[in-house]
Amino acid sequence: MTTSDAASAYERRCRLLMRLAYPPRFREFRGTELLGTLLDLAEPGQSSPTLRDGLDVLRGGLMLRLREHPPVGHWFLYRLMGSQVPWKYRWWARDDIQGRFFFERHVFFVVLFWGPYSMFLRSFMSNMIFTSFSASLVFLGATYLLLRPFKALLRRSWLARHEFHPDGTSYVPIPQRPALTERHTPPNRTMPEE
Image (cartoon, rainbow, N blue to C red):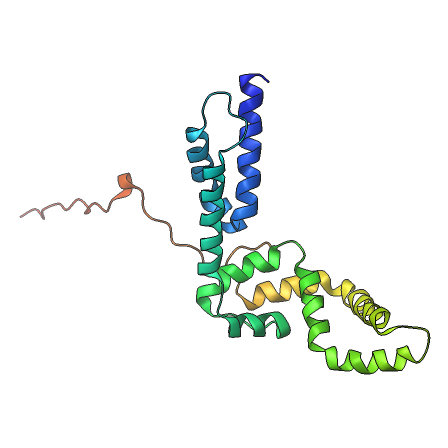
């Protein structure tokens, strides 16, 4: 393996490690810094991060995810009924809503919430040709198929509830810090002529 092949393999593995560890928002804003640090740590010809570096990245990502996760009560209401999480956790909600399998997680929790009704359905269907397990699968599949046409609408409405546009940008713009060269200079004052 040549040095350039090892470097590209190392970078690919670092990006995969970051994708597993950190939420998308962190990778969007700080991903290049973390990747640059990992690339600086690489020895010449190294094709993957060391075990210690990999565990450090995973630990950092896990700690960030735990720190930004809403409390259990807010999380539970968010999952079951789509209620708005407090402002502090809205970026977590954005990552969750835009994440992979958002719709499937929502359907699973809807079915979990409506579980008592599925028990009735199972008892009714178990007298027919279904076992209780297959009746549960039928209920889950039917719910998924009924809600599937509303997938994009559901995602848009949940993003709007947390004050995000459909593309995930915030309604409230992030204030930009002025550059060092754009410091406030007082206007030129001229003395009035006598």
